[in-house]
Image 1 (spheres, rainbow, N blue to C red):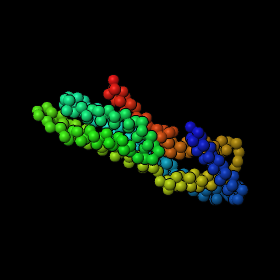
Image 2: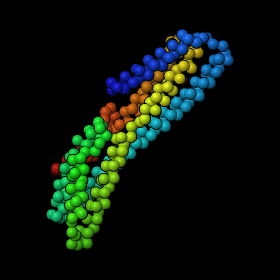
Image 3: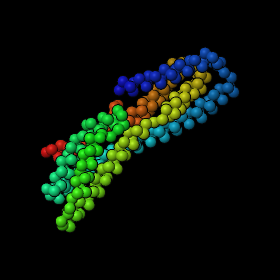
Image 4: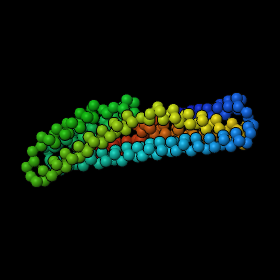
Length: 247
């Protein structure tokens, strides 16, 4: 939470720096027409700024929950392929071994790698490829085994699709243009507040505005990388499935 406190504090300091800086340059008690113009400008800029933050915030929340949903789909596909391999017989023993190793790698090694470098684990891909190779080489001798092999192939392809989506989300960082626009928006809104005298009540309200804006910026920053702190999405389902396989 140190990063969050830092972003909130930096936003508060930026707002007050601009506020007092503009009051020292412009007339601190402007005429009515100037006051009306400043109010109008602040209203329009703050509306646009709030809309930008709201849209980006909503987008990050959707992406965050999409990752959780995709991870659940992948875990379900792994489980289905694994237990279909059990039903298939001894010929599919290698599929089970590869999937057990795969599930052990993803929530530890791969998740950390996605948070740091944004890359999928080559070891996890190797285990996926091993399971896929074995399923392709199976030679069903009954309708039951034909159905099980076809289903394992579908599930293994689904695992690969979800892996690609996971890598995409790890590399879909927010553009620096957004952060520039967000910061400039905060500063421009702060400029318009110069018409209000630096009384205690006004300063408290400015603090509330800037602190809440900083909180929103921190939340967007935290959710923009769901594979690392401070808002990392823990791969709980992978851990649970790994324990189930080992049990």
